[in-house]
Length: 119
Image (cartoon, rainbow, N blue to C red; front, side):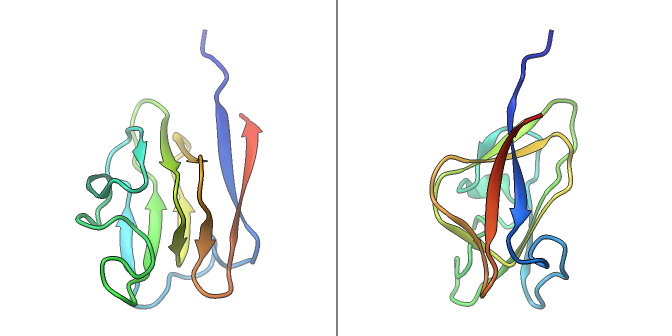
């Protein structure tokens, strides 16, 4: 019997952050494998040696982020620190973004909110 998992759903507070066009000149960063991990682990991202966060590793760096690795089992990306991205897309139905601390925000005037649900 499969247990119930608490899942986090990301919702945009300003339309366009999640569904808008990618920021011009931004670095495209994808979660590379369908395994649990921490957002701040650079080896989990295609942008290695940096994890996606505005101004890292260089001032002015922006990120279009995709969590969409496909696999056979659900996985969780844990977020425990302040992160700012230009765009966030969760495109795998097996992926969960779990905020355990910090703030997830959009670059500029945009912001993101997290809503917990039992799915």
